[in-house]
Length: 416
Image (tube, rainbow, N blue to C red):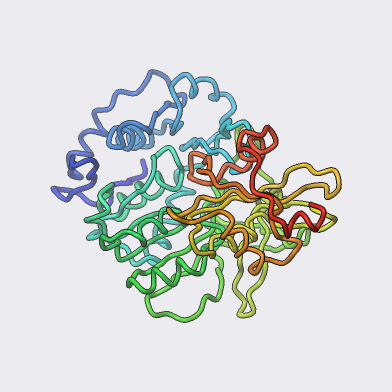
């Protein structure tokens, strides 16, 4: 048994929706869970009741049963024979470019998650006195990890941001926290390939310690950096403790490979790219900062080939997110007879912001090759992890479900 409860007695372990559960109460609840008969995986629907979900997950891990987080028992029975030996956690995930929305299952050992617990606690300065907020459903791996990590260090897991001392969040969620009038938690742990500089600056201005990391469900933590309030300029990400990285040339740039104790076992319904030396990759590209750190550019599969040039969607999105009035942005390529693919931007706008104004501002921020040729203002469809669902957007654009868009005169003169 691997002990995931880092405290005992009457300390608060869980606080969700005003309901609190002490560590001793949680331990008793875990011992009392009745699991399905047999030794196969257990389905755990994590969307409805986070307290019940965490209790079920802990009970499965306590008794050595694989647990499918985010799936039904029928789903668990269906994948039982496909799970590799040693699976403790089976995590549903859908990539940001998946058009059909069908989840892949990341199979991993419990040890592969717990191995990163102590390094993350040290990097973020977290301890038993913290109240750590999760900002999304536990079926999403980053939120489940946040909850289990908090319990492992003896801290409280909560959904109450007003009392939290630390929070796990996506860049979009962080932006909303920073724009709110209420005081944010003093520490923010943020996952994302490229955090906009303006969010780092806003976090520093509000006295927030910012831990920025890059990872993937298959790889767990890969790169990270801690920004202290009042710290220096961004120097890029460095390997997370215990991770070896290898940058390998591909047609689109440098592909990031990682070797660490944190890697998953395999991907059910997909494939995990590994080599004989134990390195693995999900296809993300990186570039070096002058100071030696790294910047993650995004998935090589999201590259847009337009007029013979390769444009990375995430790179364009980072520029758009820095424009006034842009709350979020997604960039995709749509088929085009002349260009091969035409760059299209879909943006979520702040109230009162005009799409034409944003498109005009982008002309000054982007080089001509990267400049979107069509624009749409719409709410972005998202994957369960909160990322823009580019595949669905691409389908909607091609099918005309977003309308005709906003072609600009300066774009039309370029024979878009």
